[in-house]
Image (cartoon, rainbow, N blue to C red; front, top):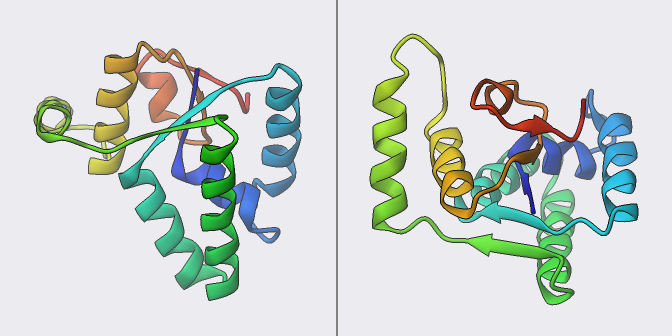
Length: 137
């Protein structure tokens, strides 16, 4: 299982993103591996909002369609942040007072720990800092 972070979703969806070509190539490799993916409601919220603001409404809707299709095809597992994961995210956030982490990142780390995920499709080096392999490297 590979965790998909906001930056990877945005890079896949938005051709003008600085990581678009790398994201497309990495995603193609992962698909050849028949990888299964995991993401969260927080990540989807962050990605669709950024796409809406930075790209366009239609790009944001296309992204939501991609998410829906991936879930229907059983390629993407979707995790909603519940109270236990939220509290673990708070603990992670409070532990790293000298590192600039978003709360969404902390929730993502909590989900990865909970599901035993060791690899992230991400451009955010904080995943590597947390001991995870990056699929984009």
